[in-house]
Length: 331
Figure 1 (cartoon, rainbow, N blue to C red):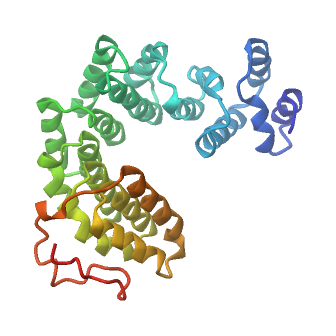
Figure 2 (tube, helix red, strand yellow):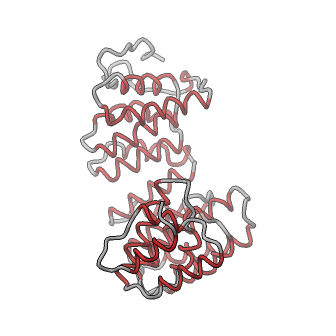
């Protein structure tokens, strides 16, 4: 592994590609090391800083063994908007309330649409923690007010508004529900997709389950993806049959999220669909199916499917593997 000095030398060597492996040396810097990093960082051109910051974000997403939060905080005040946007995204797991003021300022005043959208997304983590009562409600209230104001501001770009709505999805209040419903009926398809995303986050299956299930048949793969994900978050059992049909969707990302969703919903029908995936030739889904089955086992799934109505379930082919025993289809 490269030392900090070697990594900083590499960053400063503009004629050399950035050493991804060397970036691990920037994890968990102490105060003196951080100052050393800042000194080198300030000498780098914007494109080099932007590339390095994005690499740090990618590494942080790929492994839990690194901590670049101190570097992301440095990036919040960078002169380059691409660096700021990446730095904000990198702080997704950092729920230190001290960051709230900075993120709100970026949301409300940054000149870059990408930065404002990133801030809107990351602030959702604080909304979620507030719902769990892990953060004082008084600290979360300004975030909620700001996100709602941004969503209602039609002068804001759709990308910013939709990320604000997604972050508000964690809330269960009537006002937020009305915003989600409004977005779902909006003429802009992206906003409608984000409304379904927010429906899943709400965990309100009674209110949104039917809509989510209907969107599983959408001609738009982005909508099918979000609907499948939302069905899993809502644990909406009546969607299992339609999810089964998505296991051979033309879009592989839809297939993957469908497998995940079945693991979240659980029950005997979902379990058999997942087993069918493992027995199929769809090798790209096998690992996800194994994880989903492990999730079912972890939950100790014992859901009574006689409580749900699977309309015409015994007349439709919904199992991926034609050899799968369908003896329970009359449940």
